[in-house]
Image (cartoon, rainbow, N blue to C red):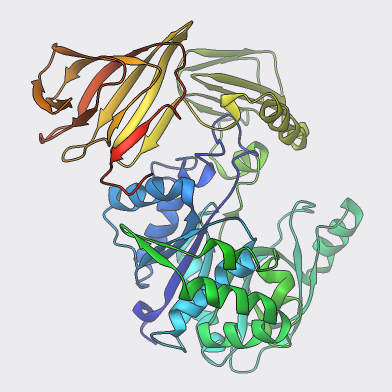
Length: 474
């Protein structure tokens, strides 16, 4: 078949806890370049494009919408659509929504479901596995891709192969889906050779998904169908209706359908796959030196083995350590035993209970117009760097609790202040008194960089009254 007719559905969720401090709630791991120059999301999009598939549909959260759109634009790939979940309801409602949208134009269209945050080293083998799966999916099977196990892994779910699948050389019926096993059971699975890691990648016809899921979860399909029908356009995004989507049960597609249907199939594959679920698993897929270390950034090691050491800023040195994870970001440092990474969730939970910003966002925060980065914070003042993309502008706004002083570093700023327009060039500045109505715009051809000094009794990001906004934000 023409693979350009296959619709990739990329699920871009996540809370950003397992790869903290690099990954944060507002900037989780799929947006990070962890295994190459492109982010994991960009690698997924590029992989689909290289395979000749159609433009991808992405389902993401409201908070991530501009980052997703910008990352697709940065690698010059057009999306089919970008849907926004009003709240997290696990994978089954999200996939059902996409299938309902797809059936409206072509009921028998094949959908390839892919997580946005996985790594695949052997893309040729991945494309070959896809080719194997297509005939079974066309015939109505629900195909999953099982990763041939290379170790007794307790952190993954497993799929037990059944009989060979008629009409699909290399495919098998699914005998059983198995939850994450204990160590002894995982070793038995590895020795037996009949169990595969569950990759979370699926291929099926959209109409078959709606039909079969409706048998097992009729309330889910009913709620999601209404959420799709009531969706609203927002710039380039499609927002699912919040009230009706919230009625859908929160359940995974594995539990809702794949573990219950008689039509589940699996294609075994060896593709250099990882879900990049922890710093330890990331180290497993990266090239290491002769001492088993992976280094990134300004790092110096001495008498250290089997470790992942990364810095995105200051010089980081490690002496006399084995099997450690050391990650330095501009605002946080992680030092951990490689075998104790399960405890990282507890650290992030402690930060959240303390309302620490470090659990939520990185110092650089992305916006549809560019990004800002906090450089220094003090009592009643803070200093930020703003970068505005060419042709973009911030909202027309005012603040009740702070004044601002902008100094242009490079580029040219067009500043509206209380109805008057000012052109501010490199090494020039402008003052915005408390309560004034103002807007910043980059009408030039190069990025605009400026330093913003805020002063006042309250400097929170919620002290913004937007009077007009090009990106539909309230």
